Length: 219
Image 1 (cartoon, rainbow, N blue to C red):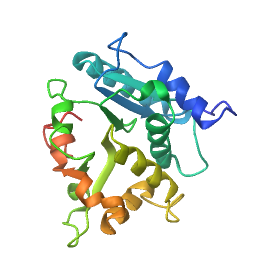
Image 2 (cartoon, rainbow, N blue to C red):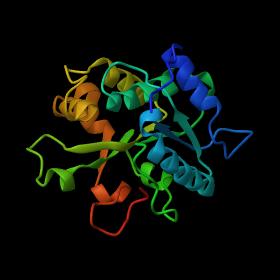
Image 3 (tube, rainbow, N blue to C red):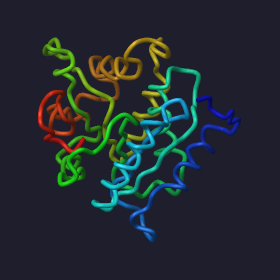
């Protein structure tokens, strides 16, 4: 399927996703805003993921928003960073959530009895899973392997500034393998903006479910 050309600004596209979000607290902001993105090319499976994730959001009192159009000419993986930047820094109505949680559109909340927010609240302003099961090895000393398929950003000045810096620092990875994930690992290595002190790297199965194993984390 081909996307309908949408010439609106990035801000307008993301605003549309936010204002048409699934709301569990009609009169106030929910503590967690779950954020997804997909375009028409992957909507066959992504729309199913969205329905499952809306069910999870409803069960726990979270909101869920979906952006349905591309935002950049980088590889699509980068659009998650742009979406989160706009939601946290440019949409006034979105400023009252405690957490902003990204989930890729090929992922679902598999454990509906496992609540997300207490895991996010354990510490850190950027909460993310390690990627050791997929790498098959531990990272070198002072480095990290993380999986950007899911991550949480806390509603803090640092997190807002960091996600903008992440978008504005592509390091030549706009259209190369692992994209924003490689850049985040490099930013950790150089301790960009004190990232080592701000990012909480959870064991893979604390947030996610390792391949071939029974689900433990919510995703």
